[in-house]
Length: 117
Image (cartoon, rainbow, N blue to C red; front, side):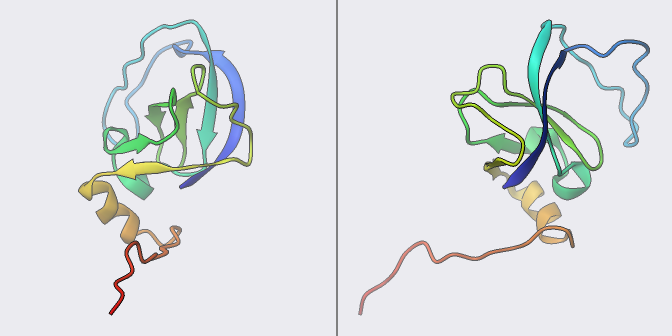
C-alpha cells in the first residue's frame, strides 16, 4: 500500500530534454495530452521497478518513478482518487525482496486462513 501525496492534471510528455535518470536509464513517454496524475510517497528504492508493481484499482496505471516517488495515471480510474488516499498494489517476488529490506516500509502479517481443530 502507498499514500497519494499529490493529484494534478499534467502533460503526459515532459517539456524539454529527457535526460538519463539516477538509475542510468533514459525514460520514454507517450504523449497522451493532459492527464490526471497521482504522485505516491514511494519509489524505486522501495520496490525496484515499475514493471513489478500492479495497482489493484481499476483504471490506474503506473507510468514512472524516481527513487522516492511513483507517478500514476489516474485519468481513467474507476473511483475518484484524492490526496491522502491509500492505494493497494500486487507485487512480484523481486519487489517483495526490495520491500522487505526497506527500513521505511512497515511489514504487517495477517493470517489469511484459520484452521479449526
